[in-house]
Every structure is written in C-alpha cells, then in structure tokens.
Amino acid sequence: MNKNPKDLAEIRRQKSLNVRIQAAEYAAGRTHPIHQNNGDEKLPRKLMSFTKGLPHDYDTGLIQDDKHFETFVEGICSGDPFKIRETPLGLPHEGTERWFSNQGKFVNKIRAWESAGAGLTFDLQGPDAQAVTMPPAPKLGSDELTAEMAEVYCQAFLRDIPFTEFKTNPQAKECLSILNKLPYFKTNKRNGKALTKDNIFRGFTDGDLNGPYISQFLLAGNNGLSTKGNKPEFKAKDGKINYGAITINQRVRLAAPRNYLTDWDEYYDVQNGANLGGCEKYVGKQRRFITTGRDLSTYVHYDALYQAYLNACLLLLGAGAPFDDGVPFQGPDDEDKQQGFAHYGGPHILTLVTEVATRALKAVRYQKFNIHRRLRPECFAARLHKMEVITELHDVPELRKTRENLEDVGIDKLLEKNNWLLPMAFYEGSPMHPTYGAGHATVAGACVTILKAFFKNDLNVNIASDGSTISFNKNKNRYAFVPSETGKTLETIKLNQPLTLEGELNKLAANISIGRDWAGVHYYSDYKESLLMGEEVAISLLQEQSKMYNPTENFSLSLRKFDGDLMKI
Image 1 (tube, rainbow, N blue to C red):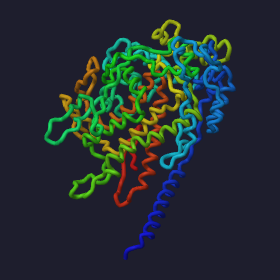
Image 2: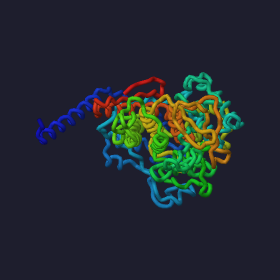
Image 3: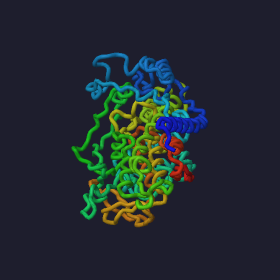
Image 4: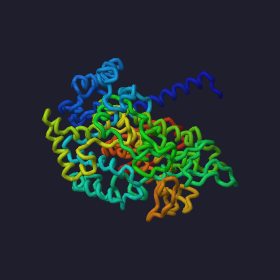
C-alpha cells in the first residue's frame, strides 16, 4: 500500500533527526582533554611568549608593559571582539616617527591578529575544536628547544642549496656536523634515529626518508585534457595538472636569494605590527620547480593552505588511482549499475579534502591562542641577539645557557658577526598568530589523512622512464622526478626501491609543514605534534560522516596512521 506523501515526509524528517542525534552523541562521547602549556609564560616580560603586534621596548625587544599581554589574553579567552579591540596594536604614537626602519617609513598598513577567536567556535561535524590537544611545547633551556633553534638557523643558512645536493654540499655537511654536537641529537632523541645526511630536515612518517626530498605530488603533472585515441596534451614531466578544462602549473615564482629582518630596526618595526608583506624580491617573472628551501618557502608563503592536497587528489583521480576496497560502486558498470559521484566519487573526496581544513584550523587556533602562545623562531632569535641586555635586567639564566650552547657548537659561525637575528624568507616575518601548533601542519595532517583513507594504501607511484606518464598501481618501476640543475624542467632518476603512494602523501605533508621551518616561521615540534592532531581531526570527521550513509552500501575506509598503526573506519 502506498503511504501518504505527508507521512513519508514525516518519516524522513524523523530519520534525519535520529541520524544527527546519533552523530552528535558519538561526538559527545569523546573525552575533552586537559590542555597544558609549558609554563614559559611565567618568565619576565613574557620573553618566551607570542607578543607580535604589541608595543615593544626598542632596547630589549620585549613588550613594554605586561598589562598589554594580559589584555591580549583576556580578549582572546573571552571571544568578545570588543575586548580584543581594547588590546594595543603596534606603537602607541602616530605620524612619521611610527616606524624606525627605512622600509617601514614606506608602509602605512598595520597587521592585525589572525582569527584569534576561532578556537571558541563550534562545528556540526568532526571533533570540537577543544576536543583535541597537543603536549606542552619544549621549554626555554631544554635540549630540544636549543636543537630546534639551531635547526632553523641551519635551514636559513642552507636556504638556497638545491635539495639534490644535500648529501654532498660542504655547507650542508657543516650544518650536519654542528647539529650532531648538540646534546639533543647526540642522544638520538629525534624520532629515535641518529641525525644523518639521509634524514636531516625530513619528516618522521613512513616514506619520508625514501627517494628525493620533494614529494612527487609537488612536481608531477598529468596528461592534460585528452580524448581517447588522441595524443596526450602534456607529459607528466611538464608539471601541469588538469583542473577541469584549465591547468595548474607546479612551478613556483623564483624568489631572489635575499633574506630579511636581519636589521634590528626592520625586525623591531615588524614586531610592532608594520606590514611589510609583499615587499620581498623576485627574479623577474621566472618560475621553476621546487628546487631549494627558498622555493619551498615561497610555495608555503602564498598557498591556499589545502591546495597541495587538492592538487594531489586531482592527480590521483586523473590517473584513475583505485579507491580503498571499502568504497562502494567500484565494480563494472554493468554490475553495479551506478557510479560514485555525489557520494563515493570525485566530488565527494575533493570536497572532503578542502572541508576538513576548516576543522583543523579551528582546532589549531585554540592551541595557538588559548593554550600555548609560543613565540615564533624569529622572536626567539631576537632574544638571543639581545641576550646580554635582557639578562642584565631580568633573571633568565636559561636564555644565557641556550646562547652559550649554540655558540659552543658553532651556530654563530653561520651568522653575520654578532648578529643573532634569524634570516627570514618573508619580509613580514611570521604570521600574526603564535607558532604552536602550526596551521599548515595541522591542515597537512588532516588533508593527507583523507587522501590515505579514500585511496588504496598498497599502491606504488609509477613514473615512466621518459617522464611521459604517472600512474598509481602495484608495479615497481622505481623512477622518480627531480628538478633539473636550473629547476626549469623535470628529470627522471632511478631509485633503489619504488616510491609508495602512502609514503609520497606522507612526504607531501612533511614538505609543506617543514617548508614553514625553511622560511623561519616554525620549529620542528610545531610540525610533528600538529600533524598528529590534524590526523585526529580528519579521522573523527570521517567516523561521524560514515554514520550518515546508507548502511546497505557497506561503506568503510582503512588507513595506516602516521605512527604506522592500521585502522578501519
């Protein structure tokens, strides 16, 4: 018997409500963790806390008044935009004396803090922004923080050395020798491995140490918009990805080999909010494939945050990479009689790769602003630069100890004489939000987890020896792309072992995250802990969404987490 349309509508309404309630109850079942910082905020004049944008003292580089910081924190924690407006932003005086540097005198704009209240918002899917957490960041005086600071100094020093030359370059060897003299690396604390030419500045996940430094997903293209029987529009080595009827060029703008904020007046202006963004220099209109740390810095300076993973997804879909076995409708059309599209198909996964980024950003904003408020590397370098005057005024022996430890291993030999300011890849320095966690790394962890969940995790990345094609299957041809000497083209090299799809996705996440370290705006621990939190955000989102699908379709996903554990959703 046919039911009344009104009855059917009411049944559907009630079912929809029940599904939402089930998902909400599932989310509510997650234990909200206790968030804890490292206690460095108790130090004098908040010298190890994020204070960028507040008025600073010229002689020390520290904030002028602790009350300014207290107002800043009160506004953030309240979520009241009117309280945030009460926080002093930049120098208190107006007019031409506002900025000290020659560059600053040409800048009228001031930078505001970025999404300070995002961690207080709510979401209808995925974990609450405060339901995930990160451990306390390394403290001032710890071996780990000293090593992390030495690392970003080395990355700034090596910023223009091609990644392909790292194993033989004398400057890279010098940095490796310096880092291995530090207690943190001497005791093999970094991911349980000794620091070597094969793993320096690389990630900690499976695949990060295999093959070239740069993931194939940041280099390769596909064959373009080609019809069956016609000659391909592009070769994979052309580095162009099909985005509908248009293409995405994998080459980045070639930045001039110039570093910024090593002049105290310019550094001081930027800490007081001067907006020097967009003042960096480029080499004409040239572009090339990511060849150096500076190229990678340029990519992560202007990326749309999730764009590397959207591009990777387009490459995978365009190459016909198979989905995980638990994704429905992958059989022959004459058997399934339907294809995945709105669900279980291209639009579904493309949307998820971008959608999860907002969840990750809200979670990491809460850690940044509300919990840790960790200062950026550029500011820690300034504390080391002004160590003598700071320690004369304030009792902070850990600061002196850190600088002495860095001097003992020879970090000062990589810098300009008596200038400990960190050479930055960006003229404006770091963004206007704290360093821990890292937005790029949290988004990387979330987006890559989506890709690893939807695509089969036992595939290899197969590149033709002539660079004509890229495919994802179980073949083992062992070729990979690397930029040519000039970076203008791609070349193929043969490896000792094949590159796996899972490994190159993990490496993509590490490249983008550690790319921010190459720029001087993050530490290694920012990357590692944020990546793991982003993974947790993505898994939670997928778990809740899985409850929305038709149970008779038997949808499921499996993936290997960043720590190597296998799990099923």
